[in-house]
Image 1: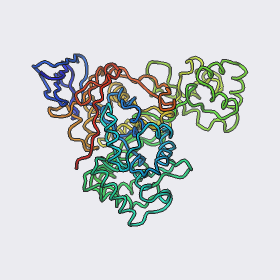
Image 2: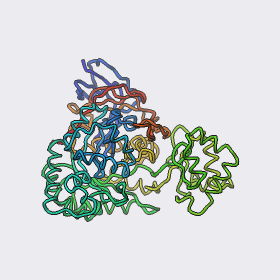
Image 3: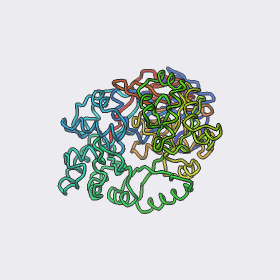
Image 4: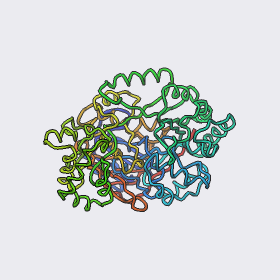
Length: 547
C-alpha cells in the first residue's frame, strides 16, 4: 500500500511535455509510481478534472528572516510553491560576528523593508558562519523546502568591517572572502549572491557593501564557487561583470533582468541575452511576471505629502474611512494634493486593481488613476478618495514601475533561459505583493494569453529552476524523485486581492495574498495545504549543496 495515491489527474511531469491522464503514487516521501497505479493508498486524492504537477520552485525570495516566525512561509506556500531560494541580492544574515547582528538587521530593513526589530527578535541568532545559519533554520522545521545562498554584503562586513562599505579590498581580503564563500558552500549554501544596485542602501544612506567592488573581487570569489559547481547570483550587474563572473566559474549564473521601461519590444532584450549567453555560457535571467511596483491605498501607503495627509497616516483603517467621509477633511486633502511636488509619482502609472475577487493586473489605460479621473471630471485625488470610500478602504492602486509593457514582457519570457519570478517574497513586505507570481503565470501566461503551453509553463515553475539551483531530486514527476506535488484546477486557479495584515513580530504590517483553485500541495510526501489552508505539517527540508 502506498502512502498517497492521486487518481485520474492530468499529469504534467515538468519536462515541458503536455498533460497525460494518469495516477501518481507516493511512498516514504518519494514518488513511487506514475501512470496506472493498481495498489491503494492510505490516502486517496481524487484528481478528476485536475492538473497534477511537481511542486513549484521560487528562485527569488528574501524569506531569510520571516522563516523565523512563519515556518509556513506564506504567502508563497498558498501558491503551490514547495521550494524557495533565499539569500538573493547579497543580503544575508551570515556570516555574522555577534557584534554585527544589529548592523545586518538594519541593512535588511532598509534594502528589503523587513522591520529590524522583527529580524532581531524573530530569529535565534545562534550562529556565526553560514552553515550555522542553515542549522538554525533546520531546527525551526519549515513547512516547505528552503535553499540558501551566502551573501556578498555579509561576507564583506565579516572580513573588512566598516571599510566594507566604501573601500576596495586588498588581495588578502579577497582571498579571505573566497575562503569564507567556499566554506559556506561546503556547509550547504547552494551558491553566492552579490548586489551592484546602487539604490540598495544602508540605514545611513550609503550603498550596501560590494556595490562598487572591483570585479576582480567577484572573480576571486568565483574561483571558490566554480569548482564546487555552485550558483552565482547577481542583481544590478552589467553584462561585462556577468561575463567576468561566468568566465571564472564556468558554471551557472543567475541575474535579474527586465523587459525595458517603455514600449520597445522585448525581442531586443531577448537578443541581448542571447549574445550574452554566446560569450558567457550558462547564464539564466529572471524577470517579473507582470507590471510591478509599490501599492497605494487607504489600507496601506498614501501617495501624497501634506499636513492633512500626515494626520491621516496616523489613523487606522476605520479612522481613515471616517476622516475621508468628512467634507471639510476631503477638501483639505484635495487642496494639498494640488500643490506642486505633493505627488511625486506619475499618476498615469497608478493603476486601480479593482474590487473583484482577483486583482486586475493586466488592465489597459482605462484603469489608470489619471484616466479614471479625467473620465469622471474629477481631480485624480478626488477619484482616489471616492474609490477608497466605495471599496471601504480596501481598493489598491499598483504603481507600474517595472515591466509596464506586458507585450514586451511576454516577448521576453518566451526566451528559453528567462524564468518568470522576481516575486521578492519576504521583502518589501508593506510596499509590494508579487509573491503570487506562480499563480499569475498559470492564470495569465498559460490560460489567458497562451504565451506558454501548460507543459512549458510548468517546466518554468519546476525542473527549470531546479536545474538553476542544482537540485537533482525535485522538479519532475518521476519515480524516485522527492514527492513535492501540486493538484489544482487549471481553469479556476487565481490570485485573490492583496490585503494588509499586522502579523509580523511587534504587529508590523505586511501584504499577504491568498489563492483559489489549488486543491492539494504535498511537500516531501506530506500534505501541506488543502483548499488554501495549511494542515500544520512541517515536512520541509533545508536543501544543502552537494557538489
